[in-house]
Image: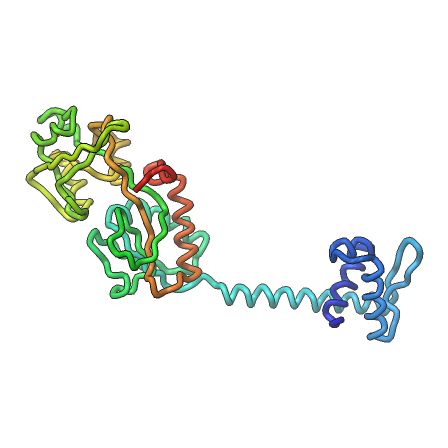
Length: 308
């Protein structure tokens, strides 16, 4: 048997004061543990333990050997920890892409908590409502809202973008509040061009069939931030994820309308380059935000039941 294993057994016998306790730890017999100590003593050519029927005590040589063994085993454990930390150190640059409003509202505010756990990671956050080529831009992980068009990407679903229809109180006072989706045909609708079928707003009431309204308006944009500002200025009605207006809703600057009609939610995914195996820092980053989003009702609610 190798010397290190015998040293570990000897140290545990001394520290527990019991051959039987060490035998239980090692899933071995008491006789087997006793034979290991005898083998160690034979290798050293000296007696380490004086045994009696009910107890044992260290000889002078045994005490000296125990002290040295304890030092050696402690040093080995410290070395193991240092090597493990070096091998799995979570450091370096992490390049992340996300839609503008989503990054502002849901990534940046949570970075403080992320850095508290992983202070040695540097995050390069690129915010863009347009398509970003992960390979060309060197992106490690990207947040995508909506159905994925590029099937080559490796994706993980981490939430849901729940949508609703919104308007500013000033707009509703001036033009009235629509009571049915078809009423939107007589209103200024603010169109976000970042999704397919940009002017088709889809609704469903209870378990009824989908109702598709082809809306019109005098303003459209590929920026959800621009749409938000237009709604706040009373320019029209938007069809947007709830998280775009979280603070505005709580402050009463925006009002949800047509609440009895539910737009289909959109999936929230993180995507990776197919040719890359996600690094440890990428996995930690994604897991941190997935856990955080699970506590956010604007993102997590209905995640397990949504069909999108």
